[in-house]
Length: 320
Length: 305
Image (cartoon, rainbow over all chains, first blue to last red; front, side):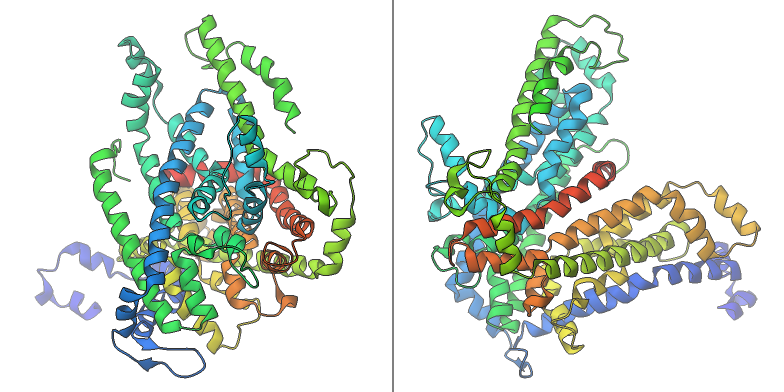
Protein backbone atom coordinates (compact mmCIF):
# COMPACT_ATOMS: atom_id res chain seq x y z
CA UNK A 1 0.00 0.00 0.00
CA UNK A 2 2.67 2.49 0.99
CA UNK A 3 4.84 1.62 -1.97
CA UNK A 4 1.92 2.18 -4.32
CA UNK A 5 1.32 5.56 -2.78
CA UNK A 6 4.97 6.46 -3.22
CA UNK A 7 5.12 5.37 -6.85
CA UNK A 8 4.17 8.20 -9.20
CA UNK A 9 2.86 5.62 -11.66
CA UNK A 10 -0.23 5.19 -9.47
CA UNK A 11 -1.26 8.77 -10.26
CA UNK A 12 -4.89 8.10 -11.30
CA UNK A 13 -5.69 6.91 -7.79
CA UNK A 14 -7.98 9.52 -6.23
CA UNK A 15 -6.33 11.60 -3.51
CA UNK A 16 -8.91 10.52 -0.93
CA UNK A 17 -7.62 7.00 -1.20
CA UNK A 18 -4.11 8.06 -0.33
CA UNK A 19 -5.42 9.90 2.67
CA UNK A 20 -7.21 6.77 3.92
CA UNK A 21 -4.00 4.85 3.83
CA UNK A 22 -2.17 7.48 5.86
CA UNK A 23 -0.68 6.31 9.17
CA UNK A 24 -3.15 8.24 11.28
CA UNK A 25 -6.12 6.83 9.35
CA UNK A 26 -4.69 3.35 9.75
CA UNK A 27 -4.25 3.92 13.45
CA UNK A 28 -7.87 5.03 13.69
CA UNK A 29 -9.07 2.01 11.74
CA UNK A 30 -7.06 -0.36 13.89
CA UNK A 31 -8.34 1.24 17.08
CA UNK A 32 -11.91 0.99 15.80
CA UNK A 33 -11.48 -2.64 14.83
CA UNK A 34 -10.01 -3.38 18.24
CA UNK A 35 -13.16 -2.08 19.91
CA UNK A 36 -15.36 -3.95 17.46
CA UNK A 37 -13.36 -7.17 17.68
CA UNK A 38 -15.56 -8.84 20.34
CA UNK A 39 -18.50 -8.59 18.00
CA UNK A 40 -16.47 -9.86 15.03
CA UNK A 41 -15.39 -12.93 16.98
CA UNK A 42 -18.94 -13.47 18.23
CA UNK A 43 -20.35 -13.04 14.74
CA UNK A 44 -17.99 -15.63 13.29
CA UNK A 45 -18.46 -18.19 16.08
CA UNK A 46 -22.11 -17.71 17.07
CA UNK A 47 -23.74 -16.47 13.86
CA UNK A 48 -21.78 -17.16 10.68
CA UNK A 49 -20.60 -20.63 11.57
CA UNK A 50 -23.96 -21.74 13.01
CA UNK A 51 -25.72 -20.58 9.82
CA UNK A 52 -23.35 -22.59 7.64
CA UNK A 53 -23.37 -25.59 9.94
CA UNK A 54 -27.14 -25.49 10.25
CA UNK A 55 -27.44 -25.52 6.46
CA UNK A 56 -25.15 -28.56 6.38
CA UNK A 57 -26.96 -30.31 9.24
CA UNK A 58 -30.27 -29.86 7.45
CA UNK A 59 -28.91 -32.24 4.81
CA UNK A 60 -27.95 -34.88 7.36
CA UNK A 61 -29.32 -37.36 9.82
CA UNK A 62 -27.85 -36.45 13.21
CA UNK A 63 -28.70 -37.53 16.75
CA UNK A 64 -25.67 -35.95 18.54
CA UNK A 65 -24.45 -39.37 19.76
CA UNK A 66 -23.20 -40.61 16.39
CA UNK A 67 -21.65 -38.60 13.55
CA UNK A 68 -23.99 -36.90 11.08
CA UNK A 69 -24.72 -38.94 7.97
CA UNK A 70 -25.38 -37.10 4.73
CA UNK A 71 -28.86 -37.78 3.41
CA UNK A 72 -29.24 -35.07 0.77
CA UNK A 73 -32.63 -33.41 0.61
CA UNK A 74 -34.38 -36.20 2.53
CA UNK A 75 -35.26 -33.96 5.48
CA UNK A 76 -36.90 -31.42 3.21
CA UNK A 77 -38.83 -34.15 1.41
CA UNK A 78 -39.98 -35.50 4.76
CA UNK A 79 -41.11 -32.03 5.81
CA UNK A 80 -43.29 -31.77 2.74
CA UNK A 81 -45.23 -34.86 3.80
CA UNK A 82 -45.02 -34.51 7.59
CA UNK A 83 -48.58 -33.78 8.79
CA UNK A 84 -47.17 -32.23 11.99
CA UNK A 85 -45.26 -29.65 9.96
CA UNK A 86 -48.42 -28.67 8.17
CA UNK A 87 -50.29 -28.56 11.48
CA UNK A 88 -47.61 -26.51 13.22
CA UNK A 89 -47.36 -24.06 10.31
CA UNK A 90 -51.12 -23.70 10.14
CA UNK A 91 -51.40 -23.19 13.92
CA UNK A 92 -48.66 -20.58 13.84
CA UNK A 93 -50.22 -18.77 10.91
CA UNK A 94 -53.64 -18.78 12.56
CA UNK A 95 -52.19 -17.45 15.79
CA UNK A 96 -50.27 -14.71 13.96
CA UNK A 97 -53.35 -13.67 11.99
CA UNK A 98 -55.41 -13.43 15.19
CA UNK A 99 -52.76 -11.96 17.45
CA UNK A 100 -50.93 -9.32 15.40
CA UNK A 101 -53.90 -7.16 14.27
CA UNK A 102 -55.51 -7.44 17.70
CA UNK A 103 -52.28 -6.51 19.44
CA UNK A 104 -51.48 -3.54 17.19
CA UNK A 105 -55.02 -2.14 17.35
CA UNK A 106 -55.11 -2.42 21.15
CA UNK A 107 -51.64 -0.87 21.45
CA UNK A 108 -52.74 2.00 19.23
CA UNK A 109 -56.01 2.51 21.09
CA UNK A 110 -54.22 2.62 24.45
CA UNK A 111 -51.58 4.99 23.12
CA UNK A 112 -54.25 7.33 21.71
CA UNK A 113 -56.04 7.28 25.06
CA UNK A 114 -52.84 8.00 26.96
CA UNK A 115 -52.08 10.85 24.59
CA UNK A 116 -55.33 12.48 25.73
CA UNK A 117 -54.63 11.95 29.41
CA UNK A 118 -52.45 15.01 30.04
CA UNK A 119 -50.26 14.81 33.10
CA UNK A 120 -51.70 11.57 34.42
CA UNK A 121 -50.40 9.73 31.32
CA UNK A 122 -47.15 8.82 33.08
CA UNK A 123 -48.94 6.94 35.82
CA UNK A 124 -51.11 4.92 33.44
CA UNK A 125 -48.20 4.24 31.14
CA UNK A 126 -46.41 2.63 34.08
CA UNK A 127 -49.51 0.63 34.99
CA UNK A 128 -49.78 -0.74 31.45
CA UNK A 129 -46.11 -1.62 31.32
CA UNK A 130 -45.78 -3.54 34.60
CA UNK A 131 -47.35 -6.80 33.28
CA UNK A 132 -44.63 -6.87 30.63
CA UNK A 133 -42.17 -7.63 33.44
CA UNK A 134 -43.93 -10.94 34.21
CA UNK A 135 -41.83 -13.90 33.05
CA UNK A 136 -43.55 -15.66 30.12
CA UNK A 137 -43.61 -18.93 32.08
CA UNK A 138 -45.74 -17.23 34.73
CA UNK A 139 -47.91 -15.80 31.95
CA UNK A 140 -48.49 -19.40 30.90
CA UNK A 141 -49.59 -20.21 34.45
CA UNK A 142 -51.92 -17.21 34.53
CA UNK A 143 -53.38 -18.32 31.21
CA UNK A 144 -54.26 -21.74 32.61
CA UNK A 145 -55.77 -20.24 35.76
CA UNK A 146 -57.57 -17.09 34.62
CA UNK A 147 -58.87 -18.66 31.40
CA UNK A 148 -59.93 -21.90 33.05
CA UNK A 149 -63.27 -22.79 31.47
CA UNK A 150 -65.03 -23.73 34.71
CA UNK A 151 -63.53 -21.62 37.47
CA UNK A 152 -61.51 -18.97 35.67
CA UNK A 153 -61.87 -15.28 36.42
CA UNK A 154 -62.32 -14.41 32.73
CA UNK A 155 -65.40 -16.58 32.36
CA UNK A 156 -66.71 -15.37 35.70
CA UNK A 157 -66.53 -11.78 34.47
CA UNK A 158 -68.10 -12.79 31.15
CA UNK A 159 -70.85 -14.49 33.15
CA UNK A 160 -71.69 -11.17 34.80
CA UNK A 161 -72.57 -9.91 31.32
CA UNK A 162 -74.58 -13.04 30.65
CA UNK A 163 -71.97 -14.56 28.35
CA UNK A 164 -71.24 -18.24 28.70
CA UNK A 165 -67.45 -18.26 28.22
CA UNK A 166 -65.76 -21.05 26.28
CA UNK A 167 -63.26 -23.61 27.59
CA UNK A 168 -60.32 -21.44 26.60
CA UNK A 169 -57.58 -23.88 27.64
CA UNK A 170 -59.07 -27.20 26.57
CA UNK A 171 -61.27 -26.51 23.56
CA UNK A 172 -59.02 -26.71 20.48
CA UNK A 173 -60.93 -23.88 18.80
CA UNK A 174 -60.27 -21.48 21.69
CA UNK A 175 -56.63 -22.17 22.56
CA UNK A 176 -55.22 -19.68 20.06
CA UNK A 177 -57.69 -16.89 20.86
CA UNK A 178 -56.87 -17.43 24.55
CA UNK A 179 -53.14 -17.12 23.90
CA UNK A 180 -53.74 -14.03 21.75
CA UNK A 181 -55.83 -12.43 24.48
CA UNK A 182 -53.28 -13.02 27.21
CA UNK A 183 -50.56 -11.65 24.91
CA UNK A 184 -52.44 -8.34 25.09
CA UNK A 185 -51.49 -8.21 28.72
CA UNK A 186 -47.90 -7.57 27.63
CA UNK A 187 -48.84 -4.82 25.19
CA UNK A 188 -47.24 -2.13 27.38
CA UNK A 189 -43.90 -1.77 25.60
CA UNK A 190 -45.59 -1.24 22.24
CA UNK A 191 -47.90 1.33 23.84
CA UNK A 192 -44.82 3.22 25.02
CA UNK A 193 -43.33 3.17 21.51
CA UNK A 194 -46.54 4.43 19.91
CA UNK A 195 -47.07 7.05 22.60
CA UNK A 196 -43.55 8.38 21.99
CA UNK A 197 -44.38 8.62 18.29
CA UNK A 198 -47.68 10.38 19.03
CA UNK A 199 -45.88 12.98 21.10
CA UNK A 200 -43.54 13.71 18.19
CA UNK A 201 -46.43 14.75 15.97
CA UNK A 202 -46.12 18.55 15.58
CA UNK A 203 -48.98 20.39 17.27
CA UNK A 204 -49.25 22.78 14.30
CA UNK A 205 -50.64 19.97 12.19
CA UNK A 206 -53.52 19.46 14.62
CA UNK A 207 -54.13 23.19 14.85
CA UNK A 208 -54.26 23.41 11.07
CA UNK A 209 -56.65 20.48 10.91
CA UNK A 210 -58.86 22.07 13.58
CA UNK A 211 -58.96 25.32 11.65
CA UNK A 212 -60.12 23.30 8.66
CA UNK A 213 -62.93 21.98 10.84
CA UNK A 214 -61.68 18.41 11.14
CA UNK A 215 -63.21 16.45 14.05
CA UNK A 216 -61.36 13.98 16.28
CA UNK A 217 -61.79 11.01 13.99
CA UNK A 218 -60.79 12.95 10.91
CA UNK A 219 -57.72 14.38 12.65
CA UNK A 220 -56.73 10.90 13.76
CA UNK A 221 -57.14 9.45 10.31
CA UNK A 222 -55.52 12.21 8.28
CA UNK A 223 -52.88 13.55 10.67
CA UNK A 224 -52.10 11.12 13.49
CA UNK A 225 -52.02 7.80 11.67
CA UNK A 226 -49.85 8.97 8.77
CA UNK A 227 -47.47 10.73 11.15
CA UNK A 228 -46.97 7.65 13.34
CA UNK A 229 -47.10 5.12 10.50
CA UNK A 230 -43.36 4.49 10.89
CA UNK A 231 -43.76 3.43 14.52
CA UNK A 232 -46.89 1.42 13.69
CA UNK A 233 -44.96 -0.42 11.02
CA UNK A 234 -42.11 -1.10 13.44
CA UNK A 235 -44.49 -2.51 16.06
CA UNK A 236 -46.26 -4.63 13.45
CA UNK A 237 -43.10 -6.14 11.98
CA UNK A 238 -41.43 -6.85 15.33
CA UNK A 239 -44.61 -8.39 16.67
CA UNK A 240 -45.20 -10.51 13.58
CA UNK A 241 -41.71 -11.96 13.85
CA UNK A 242 -42.33 -12.65 17.55
CA UNK A 243 -45.71 -14.27 16.86
CA UNK A 244 -44.15 -16.60 14.30
CA UNK A 245 -41.70 -17.69 17.01
CA UNK A 246 -44.33 -18.16 19.73
CA UNK A 247 -42.87 -20.59 22.24
CA UNK A 248 -42.71 -19.97 25.96
CA UNK A 249 -46.30 -19.17 26.97
CA UNK A 250 -47.74 -22.03 24.92
CA UNK A 251 -45.02 -24.47 25.89
CA UNK A 252 -45.24 -23.83 29.61
CA UNK A 253 -49.04 -24.07 29.57
CA UNK A 254 -49.60 -26.98 27.21
CA UNK A 255 -46.43 -29.05 26.92
CA UNK A 256 -43.82 -30.70 29.04
CA UNK A 257 -43.32 -33.83 31.07
CA UNK A 258 -46.51 -35.58 32.08
CA UNK A 259 -48.77 -33.00 30.53
CA UNK A 260 -51.07 -35.21 28.52
CA UNK A 261 -54.49 -34.17 29.73
CA UNK A 262 -54.74 -31.47 27.11
CA UNK A 263 -55.18 -31.83 23.43
CA UNK A 264 -51.81 -30.33 22.53
CA UNK A 265 -52.35 -30.35 18.81
CA UNK A 266 -54.04 -26.96 18.83
CA UNK A 267 -51.09 -25.41 20.66
CA UNK A 268 -48.37 -27.10 18.61
CA UNK A 269 -46.67 -23.99 17.28
CA UNK A 270 -43.82 -24.21 14.83
CA UNK A 271 -40.97 -23.44 17.23
CA UNK A 272 -42.42 -25.86 19.77
CA UNK A 273 -42.39 -28.62 17.16
CA UNK A 274 -38.85 -27.65 16.15
CA UNK A 275 -37.74 -27.71 19.78
CA UNK A 276 -39.29 -31.10 20.44
CA UNK A 277 -37.82 -32.61 17.28
CA UNK A 278 -34.36 -31.21 18.04
CA UNK A 279 -34.03 -31.60 21.77
CA UNK A 280 -36.57 -34.23 22.81
CA UNK A 281 -36.31 -36.56 19.80
CA UNK A 282 -32.70 -35.56 19.03
CA UNK A 283 -33.52 -35.25 15.33
CA UNK A 284 -30.97 -32.47 14.94
CA UNK A 285 -30.78 -32.71 11.15
CA UNK A 286 -34.52 -32.60 10.70
CA UNK A 287 -34.87 -29.76 13.22
CA UNK A 288 -32.24 -27.78 11.30
CA UNK A 289 -34.25 -28.18 8.13
CA UNK A 290 -37.34 -27.03 10.06
CA UNK A 291 -35.39 -23.96 11.20
CA UNK A 292 -34.53 -23.04 7.64
CA UNK A 293 -38.14 -23.24 6.55
CA UNK A 294 -39.07 -20.91 9.41
CA UNK A 295 -36.31 -18.53 8.37
CA UNK A 296 -37.58 -18.43 4.79
CA UNK A 297 -41.19 -17.94 5.90
CA UNK A 298 -40.29 -15.08 8.24
CA UNK A 299 -38.14 -13.42 5.58
CA UNK A 300 -40.95 -13.66 3.03
CA UNK A 301 -43.55 -12.25 5.41
CA UNK A 302 -41.22 -9.42 6.44
CA UNK A 303 -40.44 -8.67 2.78
CA UNK A 304 -44.15 -8.50 1.96
CA UNK A 305 -44.70 -6.17 4.91
CA UNK A 306 -41.82 -3.98 3.70
CA UNK A 307 -43.26 -3.75 0.20
CA UNK A 308 -46.71 -2.91 1.54
CA UNK A 309 -45.20 -0.36 3.91
CA UNK A 310 -43.61 1.53 1.01
CA UNK A 311 -47.12 2.57 0.05
CA UNK A 312 -48.46 3.13 3.56
CA UNK A 313 -45.64 4.44 5.70
CA UNK A 314 -44.74 8.09 5.71
CA UNK A 315 -41.26 9.06 6.82
CA UNK A 316 -40.75 12.71 7.46
CA UNK A 317 -37.61 14.06 5.81
CA UNK A 318 -34.97 11.36 6.09
CA UNK A 319 -35.52 7.66 5.68
CA UNK A 320 -35.26 5.55 8.84
CA UNK B 1 -52.97 0.04 44.33
CA UNK B 2 -56.22 0.36 42.44
CA UNK B 3 -57.74 2.61 45.06
CA UNK B 4 -55.17 5.31 44.44
CA UNK B 5 -55.99 6.20 40.85
CA UNK B 6 -59.70 5.91 41.56
CA UNK B 7 -59.46 8.50 44.28
CA UNK B 8 -57.24 10.74 42.20
CA UNK B 9 -59.52 10.72 39.19
CA UNK B 10 -61.71 13.76 39.90
CA UNK B 11 -58.72 15.93 40.73
CA UNK B 12 -56.83 14.95 37.63
CA UNK B 13 -59.90 15.38 35.46
CA UNK B 14 -60.80 18.80 36.81
CA UNK B 15 -57.25 20.15 37.11
CA UNK B 16 -57.35 23.24 34.92
CA UNK B 17 -54.80 23.60 32.19
CA UNK B 18 -53.42 20.12 32.78
CA UNK B 19 -54.14 19.55 29.13
CA UNK B 20 -52.08 21.41 26.59
CA UNK B 21 -50.79 23.59 29.44
CA UNK B 22 -48.86 26.26 27.62
CA UNK B 23 -51.33 26.55 24.75
CA UNK B 24 -53.11 29.79 23.94
CA UNK B 25 -56.50 28.32 24.90
CA UNK B 26 -56.84 29.63 28.42
CA UNK B 27 -60.53 28.87 28.90
CA UNK B 28 -61.29 25.21 28.59
CA UNK B 29 -64.74 24.55 27.23
CA UNK B 30 -66.78 22.24 29.43
CA UNK B 31 -66.89 19.68 26.67
CA UNK B 32 -63.13 19.23 26.72
CA UNK B 33 -63.24 18.78 30.45
CA UNK B 34 -65.84 16.05 30.03
CA UNK B 35 -63.75 14.36 27.39
CA UNK B 36 -60.81 14.38 29.77
CA UNK B 37 -62.95 12.89 32.54
CA UNK B 38 -64.13 10.08 30.27
CA UNK B 39 -60.57 9.39 29.10
CA UNK B 40 -59.24 9.19 32.64
CA UNK B 41 -62.12 7.01 33.82
CA UNK B 42 -61.47 4.61 30.95
CA UNK B 43 -57.78 4.56 31.79
CA UNK B 44 -58.53 3.77 35.43
CA UNK B 45 -60.74 0.86 34.38
CA UNK B 46 -58.01 -0.40 32.04
CA UNK B 47 -55.42 -0.07 34.80
CA UNK B 48 -57.53 -2.43 36.90
CA UNK B 49 -57.61 -4.89 33.98
CA UNK B 50 -53.83 -4.73 33.60
CA UNK B 51 -52.87 -4.88 37.26
CA UNK B 52 -55.56 -7.23 38.53
CA UNK B 53 -54.02 -10.49 37.25
CA UNK B 54 -50.90 -9.76 39.30
CA UNK B 55 -52.97 -9.02 42.40
CA UNK B 56 -55.03 -12.15 41.72
CA UNK B 57 -51.85 -14.19 41.57
CA UNK B 58 -50.46 -12.68 44.74
CA UNK B 59 -53.76 -13.19 46.54
CA UNK B 60 -54.08 -16.81 45.36
CA UNK B 61 -50.63 -17.59 46.76
CA UNK B 62 -52.04 -16.95 50.25
CA UNK B 63 -55.05 -19.21 49.78
CA UNK B 64 -55.37 -22.89 50.73
CA UNK B 65 -55.76 -25.34 47.85
CA UNK B 66 -59.54 -25.43 47.87
CA UNK B 67 -59.80 -21.66 47.53
CA UNK B 68 -57.28 -20.96 44.77
CA UNK B 69 -60.02 -20.72 42.16
CA UNK B 70 -62.52 -18.77 44.26
CA UNK B 71 -61.46 -15.49 42.57
CA UNK B 72 -61.79 -13.56 45.82
CA UNK B 73 -59.58 -10.53 46.16
CA UNK B 74 -58.89 -11.10 49.86
CA UNK B 75 -58.25 -14.74 50.81
CA UNK B 76 -61.06 -16.13 52.96
CA UNK B 77 -58.57 -18.06 55.09
CA UNK B 78 -55.19 -16.44 54.53
CA UNK B 79 -52.26 -18.77 54.98
CA UNK B 80 -48.49 -18.76 54.49
CA UNK B 81 -48.48 -22.52 54.13
CA UNK B 82 -47.99 -22.43 50.34
CA UNK B 83 -44.71 -20.62 50.75
CA UNK B 84 -43.56 -23.23 53.26
CA UNK B 85 -44.65 -26.05 50.95
CA UNK B 86 -42.91 -24.58 47.91
CA UNK B 87 -39.77 -24.03 49.92
CA UNK B 88 -39.82 -27.68 51.00
CA UNK B 89 -40.84 -29.15 47.64
CA UNK B 90 -38.31 -27.29 45.53
CA UNK B 91 -34.77 -25.97 46.02
CA UNK B 92 -36.07 -22.46 45.51
CA UNK B 93 -33.24 -20.70 47.29
CA UNK B 94 -30.76 -22.51 45.07
CA UNK B 95 -32.75 -21.65 41.94
CA UNK B 96 -32.88 -18.02 42.97
CA UNK B 97 -29.13 -17.93 43.51
CA UNK B 98 -28.54 -19.68 40.17
CA UNK B 99 -30.75 -17.17 38.39
CA UNK B 100 -29.11 -14.24 40.13
CA UNK B 101 -25.65 -15.46 39.08
CA UNK B 102 -26.70 -16.06 35.47
CA UNK B 103 -28.56 -12.75 35.28
CA UNK B 104 -25.65 -10.76 36.71
CA UNK B 105 -23.14 -12.42 34.38
CA UNK B 106 -25.39 -12.16 31.31
CA UNK B 107 -26.27 -8.51 31.89
CA UNK B 108 -22.76 -7.51 32.97
CA UNK B 109 -20.97 -9.12 30.03
CA UNK B 110 -23.43 -7.93 27.40
CA UNK B 111 -23.33 -4.38 28.70
CA UNK B 112 -19.56 -4.16 28.69
CA UNK B 113 -19.03 -5.86 25.34
CA UNK B 114 -21.88 -4.06 23.57
CA UNK B 115 -20.63 -0.71 24.87
CA UNK B 116 -17.12 -1.44 23.55
CA UNK B 117 -18.40 -2.43 20.14
CA UNK B 118 -20.89 0.42 19.96
CA UNK B 119 -18.09 2.87 20.77
CA UNK B 120 -15.97 1.34 18.03
CA UNK B 121 -18.79 1.99 15.56
CA UNK B 122 -19.66 5.44 16.88
CA UNK B 123 -16.31 7.15 17.35
CA UNK B 124 -13.77 5.76 14.92
CA UNK B 125 -14.05 6.46 11.21
CA UNK B 126 -12.70 3.87 8.84
CA UNK B 127 -13.50 2.18 5.60
CA UNK B 128 -16.01 -0.64 5.80
CA UNK B 129 -17.52 0.66 9.03
CA UNK B 130 -20.94 1.19 7.44
CA UNK B 131 -20.97 -2.27 5.90
CA UNK B 132 -19.93 -3.90 9.18
CA UNK B 133 -22.62 -2.05 11.05
CA UNK B 134 -25.14 -3.13 8.42
CA UNK B 135 -24.09 -6.68 9.21
CA UNK B 136 -24.74 -6.06 12.92
CA UNK B 137 -28.25 -4.89 12.11
CA UNK B 138 -28.82 -7.81 9.74
CA UNK B 139 -28.13 -10.31 12.52
CA UNK B 140 -31.13 -8.89 14.38
CA UNK B 141 -33.35 -10.25 11.60
CA UNK B 142 -32.09 -13.80 12.04
CA UNK B 143 -34.61 -15.97 13.91
CA UNK B 144 -33.06 -17.55 16.98
CA UNK B 145 -34.28 -20.96 15.81
CA UNK B 146 -31.72 -21.05 12.99
CA UNK B 147 -28.68 -20.81 15.26
CA UNK B 148 -30.22 -22.71 18.20
CA UNK B 149 -29.01 -26.19 17.25
CA UNK B 150 -25.47 -25.39 16.03
CA UNK B 151 -24.95 -23.19 19.09
CA UNK B 152 -26.02 -26.08 21.28
CA UNK B 153 -23.52 -28.29 19.46
CA UNK B 154 -20.73 -25.78 20.11
CA UNK B 155 -21.37 -25.84 23.86
CA UNK B 156 -21.81 -29.59 23.72
CA UNK B 157 -18.43 -29.98 22.03
CA UNK B 158 -16.89 -27.82 24.76
CA UNK B 159 -18.46 -30.05 27.40
CA UNK B 160 -20.37 -27.13 28.90
CA UNK B 161 -23.93 -28.39 28.42
CA UNK B 162 -25.39 -28.83 31.88
CA UNK B 163 -23.55 -25.81 33.28
CA UNK B 164 -24.78 -22.22 33.27
CA UNK B 165 -21.99 -21.07 30.93
CA UNK B 166 -24.07 -21.29 27.70
CA UNK B 167 -26.69 -19.06 29.33
CA UNK B 168 -24.38 -16.06 29.49
CA UNK B 169 -21.00 -16.61 27.81
CA UNK B 170 -22.32 -15.72 24.35
CA UNK B 171 -22.97 -12.27 25.77
CA UNK B 172 -19.25 -11.57 25.97
CA UNK B 173 -19.34 -10.77 22.26
CA UNK B 174 -21.98 -8.08 22.30
CA UNK B 175 -25.55 -8.23 21.13
CA UNK B 176 -26.83 -6.49 18.01
CA UNK B 177 -29.79 -4.77 19.63
CA UNK B 178 -27.75 -3.25 22.44
CA UNK B 179 -24.92 -2.28 20.08
CA UNK B 180 -27.50 -0.42 18.02
CA UNK B 181 -28.99 1.21 21.10
CA UNK B 182 -25.69 2.28 22.66
CA UNK B 183 -24.30 3.52 19.35
CA UNK B 184 -27.29 5.85 19.06
CA UNK B 185 -26.42 7.35 22.42
CA UNK B 186 -22.68 7.55 21.72
CA UNK B 187 -23.37 9.31 18.41
CA UNK B 188 -25.20 11.99 20.35
CA UNK B 189 -22.08 12.94 22.31
CA UNK B 190 -20.17 16.06 21.28
CA UNK B 191 -16.72 15.39 19.86
CA UNK B 192 -14.90 18.21 21.63
CA UNK B 193 -14.21 16.53 25.00
CA UNK B 194 -12.57 13.66 23.16
CA UNK B 195 -10.40 15.88 20.97
CA UNK B 196 -9.33 17.75 24.09
CA UNK B 197 -8.54 14.54 25.93
CA UNK B 198 -6.56 13.30 22.95
CA UNK B 199 -4.41 16.45 23.03
CA UNK B 200 -3.84 15.77 26.72
CA UNK B 201 -2.45 12.41 25.72
CA UNK B 202 -5.39 10.20 26.72
CA UNK B 203 -5.47 6.87 24.92
CA UNK B 204 -8.54 5.28 23.35
CA UNK B 205 -9.31 3.16 26.34
CA UNK B 206 -9.25 6.12 28.74
CA UNK B 207 -11.49 8.13 26.42
CA UNK B 208 -13.98 5.28 26.30
CA UNK B 209 -13.93 4.37 29.96
CA UNK B 210 -13.48 7.80 31.56
CA UNK B 211 -15.50 10.02 29.20
CA UNK B 212 -17.87 8.13 26.89
CA UNK B 213 -19.21 5.61 29.40
CA UNK B 214 -19.92 8.12 32.20
CA UNK B 215 -21.59 10.48 29.73
CA UNK B 216 -23.88 7.69 28.52
CA UNK B 217 -24.64 6.22 31.90
CA UNK B 218 -28.44 6.11 31.34
CA UNK B 219 -27.99 4.02 28.19
CA UNK B 220 -25.53 1.73 29.97
CA UNK B 221 -27.96 1.22 32.85
CA UNK B 222 -30.77 0.63 30.37
CA UNK B 223 -28.81 -2.08 28.57
CA UNK B 224 -28.09 -3.79 31.87
CA UNK B 225 -31.76 -3.63 32.89
CA UNK B 226 -33.08 -4.89 29.56
CA UNK B 227 -30.71 -7.84 29.55
CA UNK B 228 -31.34 -8.57 33.22
CA UNK B 229 -35.03 -8.90 32.43
CA UNK B 230 -34.41 -10.98 29.30
CA UNK B 231 -32.03 -13.28 31.14
CA UNK B 232 -34.17 -13.68 34.27
CA UNK B 233 -37.30 -14.55 32.31
CA UNK B 234 -35.75 -16.79 29.64
CA UNK B 235 -37.09 -20.33 29.45
CA UNK B 236 -35.88 -21.67 26.11
CA UNK B 237 -32.17 -21.72 26.85
CA UNK B 238 -32.46 -23.18 30.36
CA UNK B 239 -34.68 -25.87 28.82
CA UNK B 240 -32.00 -26.64 26.26
CA UNK B 241 -28.91 -26.43 28.45
CA UNK B 242 -29.80 -27.33 32.03
CA UNK B 243 -30.36 -30.95 32.96
CA UNK B 244 -29.97 -31.31 36.70
CA UNK B 245 -32.56 -29.58 38.84
CA UNK B 246 -29.81 -28.22 41.10
CA UNK B 247 -28.63 -26.04 38.20
CA UNK B 248 -32.09 -24.72 37.24
CA UNK B 249 -32.88 -21.06 36.90
CA UNK B 250 -36.16 -20.02 38.41
CA UNK B 251 -38.27 -20.02 35.20
CA UNK B 252 -36.93 -23.49 34.41
CA UNK B 253 -37.75 -24.54 37.95
CA UNK B 254 -41.23 -23.07 37.65
CA UNK B 255 -41.73 -25.10 34.48
CA UNK B 256 -40.70 -28.23 36.37
CA UNK B 257 -43.20 -27.38 39.10
CA UNK B 258 -45.94 -26.84 36.50
CA UNK B 259 -45.17 -30.29 35.13
CA UNK B 260 -45.25 -31.81 38.60
CA UNK B 261 -48.12 -29.95 40.23
CA UNK B 262 -50.01 -28.45 37.29
CA UNK B 263 -52.59 -29.77 34.82
CA UNK B 264 -50.72 -32.94 33.89
CA UNK B 265 -49.54 -33.62 37.43
CA UNK B 266 -50.99 -33.56 40.89
CA UNK B 267 -53.15 -30.47 40.38
CA UNK B 268 -51.74 -28.63 43.35
CA UNK B 269 -52.22 -25.24 41.82
CA UNK B 270 -51.38 -23.39 45.02
CA UNK B 271 -47.76 -24.56 44.67
CA UNK B 272 -47.54 -23.40 41.05
CA UNK B 273 -49.17 -20.09 41.90
CA UNK B 274 -46.79 -19.42 44.77
CA UNK B 275 -43.74 -20.31 42.68
CA UNK B 276 -45.04 -17.97 39.97
CA UNK B 277 -45.20 -15.14 42.49
CA UNK B 278 -41.63 -15.85 43.61
CA UNK B 279 -40.51 -15.86 39.95
CA UNK B 280 -42.28 -12.60 39.15
CA UNK B 281 -41.64 -10.40 42.19
CA UNK B 282 -37.92 -9.77 41.46
CA UNK B 283 -38.87 -8.45 38.01
CA UNK B 284 -41.43 -6.05 39.48
CA UNK B 285 -38.76 -4.85 41.91
CA UNK B 286 -36.32 -4.45 39.01
CA UNK B 287 -38.91 -2.40 37.18
CA UNK B 288 -39.44 -0.01 40.05
CA UNK B 289 -35.68 0.36 40.52
CA UNK B 290 -35.22 1.29 36.88
CA UNK B 291 -38.65 2.58 35.93
CA UNK B 292 -37.40 5.79 34.31
CA UNK B 293 -34.83 3.91 32.25
CA UNK B 294 -37.28 1.30 30.99
CA UNK B 295 -39.84 3.81 29.76
CA UNK B 296 -37.32 6.21 28.23
CA UNK B 297 -35.34 3.38 26.70
CA UNK B 298 -38.32 1.84 24.97
CA UNK B 299 -39.45 5.24 23.72
CA UNK B 300 -36.09 6.05 22.14
CA UNK B 301 -35.22 2.64 20.72
CA UNK B 302 -38.70 2.14 19.39
CA UNK B 303 -39.10 5.45 17.66
CA UNK B 304 -35.61 5.36 16.23
CA UNK B 305 -35.89 1.77 15.02
